Image (cartoon, rainbow, N blue to C red; front, side, top):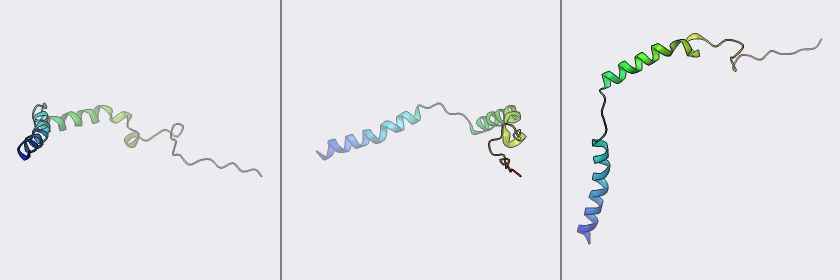
Length: 68
């Protein structure tokens, strides 16, 4: 019994390793270059870099209405 349970345990260990070994890998340098290019291409649309217009900024201070 312990031999078959050991075999089942080893299959459970080996199966994810086989799946991971079959994944396509990309070099970190290529991924970093792609990420940099994406950031540069989309920087003009990023409110943290360009600032949000006061009309569309949901975090702007609210105007206080006062009656005199």
